Length: 285
Length: 117
Image 1 (spheres, each protein chain N blue to C red):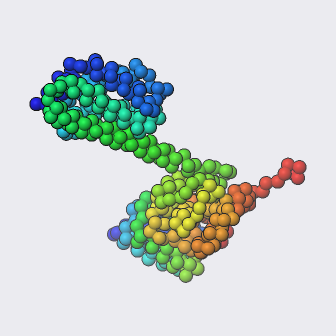
Image 2 (image 1 turned 45 degrees about the vertical axis):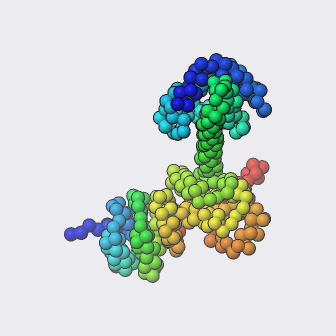
Image 3 (image 1 turned 60 degrees about the vertical axis):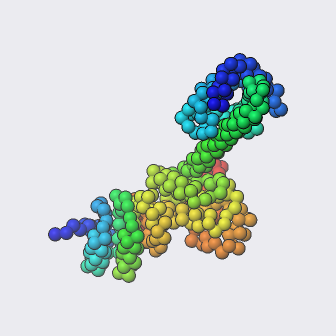
């Protein structure tokens, strides 16, 4: 059985293997000595090697998704996530598993000194196995990156839709970033909720931070305005930049039913006027 | 005796408070009662408070729009007050923006709006 040979080879030469492997990792091109200490690397490698040896001992060298391999996969995924967070590149992360190939090959060659055919067979199996583990490392690495992106998107969604009270009866919603369907529903809900909470009759939607307005974005804006109107609040759209005004006219977006102002200041002035208030300089009083 | 939604008369204004789940027959009954009451009393304004209404469908939305159109034919202005955010979003998504219906945040503001008109 080839597997038992591999297991024996590893257990016999464990300390040598570990030393050689760690050496291999440290000397490898682009190893980030600044991000990880040699002691830590050695500890990680030792733990992995123990689990690897256990899994090899089970006799299954083909299917790394089997139960025997789950401790190995677990330690790989921990390591991969950790390195992803620390800022390792994908190559540097994959190198951890892949650099085990050279020392293992050397050990096997010593074990099969007089049987080259068996040595080649053995090397093929081990090579495939390590490649699979390397690919798994990459998979987890990318997955952890993806998770970070998704979390950031969610954070942004929450952060980017604050509804601020400007005055008694006036709330403002500064929108920053592109309005898509998902964001519109969040924006709409939080705006309407605040309108109810504050009893505001006027809501100013400021789109200074919206980079482009196409028909879809305009439709979302009009939906928000319509929903606010249904609840009894008037909307003023402010911060329409000249280019956006031009595109809106070219796209034949009809905003005639909505009050629009060039700046938030203008909008606030109008809103105060509607509530029967006026801002005057103190010297005029 | 089937249930009805009460219509209260306050001066020249009719006040309707919907405090139960609207089902189709109830909505049609309200439409009937309200038009009768407007022509009987010669009211100039109708105030419909839907602040306890948690859910609407396209039919109820359409009935609300119809009631307001019918009232305006009978020379009375309609104000819908206290719509919940969820209801407003649903109506907009259904494409029912109740054009021509006046709206207000609560009964007090609705009354002020009617007085102004």
